[in-house]
Every structure is written in structure tokens, then in C-alpha cells.
Image 1 (cartoon, rainbow, N blue to C red):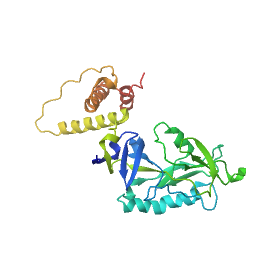
Image 2: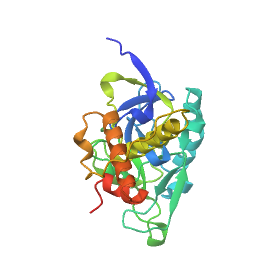
Image 3: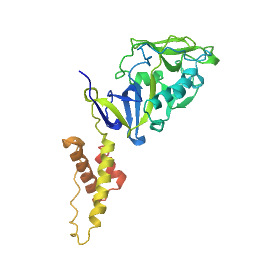
Image 4: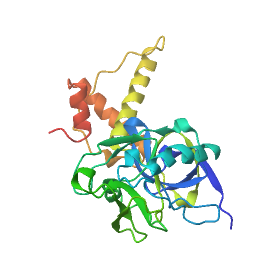
Length: 280
């Protein structure tokens, strides 16, 4: 049976959800609500039209510094153009910072900021539990060690089993699995069976509740002939945010507690801390 694709904002998809953008299937790894950004990974290594792995060397000159590698040039050049030709908006991609610390802890290669990259050992380990297995071996951006330590050719890679290994940079028998950061409000295609709706974080709900409360307060104040405000109720002890069964009700309850604490004389910062459960 043919799948029916739906369209929606990527920011509303939970981690592990699969979606299509720029003609490629991706997996959501994590959200950064403050930056309105979503970290995503290709669902598999890149394939040819016939379904074969697109093998390529990490670097044609056999160097293990990702910032100067031929695979980086491909991802941010020809591959980005391929995504754009398939409908992706280049402005939808946000900068991705990759820590190129070597496997043995040397920081010679620094931090590289790219539009499209591949995961480092550190990123791979952080999301290992939710990263779907790939169909073939592929490169990471992490060097085994660095040139000053006598290792300028070895790069870490991931086997199809998911285990980590290493190989020589100019070897062309490894695949590539793109990693990037997308704006959370872009529209992507997905199958409902392959996604879960993301639940807003506690901090997001507080911010939304406060914003709604402020808007309502200004709206009420602007009404001509409105009733006199009632006497402020005494502050109550903040309760757990999970008391409300749904997100909207929870947001309203959070703002009510926040407002009550403000009326009782707490500063905005103190009220936020108490509502979030961090206050003593």
C-alpha cells in the first residue's frame, strides 16, 4: 500500500521522527527551542539512483582534518546544490559547529562551522540510542589523532554494525551520512506512522504562558469601560507542572501561579524559579 505523506513544521516532530526534505529522508535527533533549530541526520548513507552506496574518500589528499577535507567540500558544494534542486531552501540550513577534537583528545583542528557536516564521535555517542543503523560503513568527522602526533591520515568511521573503527582518509570505500541543523518552522513531508508529535519543554511552556498572560493583560487594560480589577488573591505554593492533563491547560496554570507570585511581591526571576520548581 502506498504511503500518504503529510506536510508540517519540523519543529513539531519529536526525536526519532522521520521526514523528507530536499528529496532525502532524515531523522530528528534534537531540538534547540531557544535558537528555533532542529538537529537532523540522514536516515542512511547517501545512495546512487540505483540504490548503491555513494562511496568516497574522506579526503583525496589523505588528510584527516575535516575542515580541509574533500568530503566537506562535497557536502557543502555539490550535495547542497542537489538538495536545493530537489526543493530544499538553502536559507533553511543553520550553521553547524563540529568539534574536531581527535579520538585521543588533541584539539589541534579546532571547531569547524559548516552548513552540512557529518557527525563526530561525540555526537554519535550522544545520540547512539536513537540513531537508526546505517546500511554501510561511513565516515565520522573525528580524526584518530593529529599530524603533530604522527597521525595525519587516520579517521574514525562507523561500521554497519554501529561499532566505531578507523581507516585511512584517502580510502574510497566508505559512505557519507549527512548531518545538519534546520530551522524549526520549515515545512517537511512525513508519514504519520513514522513520526511522533513533540511535547514542548517545561521552559517553553512557561515562556508561552507568560507571553499569553501579558498579552491578555494588555488586552484587558485597553478595554473602555471595563470593570475594576478584583483584589489580588494571596499567593499559593506553586504545584507541579504535571497537574494539568494537557499542554494548553498546563500553560494557563503555570501563568496563573507565576502571576500570583508576582502579586505577592516576588521578582520575575524569583517567580520563574519557583514556578519551575527550582526555588527553595
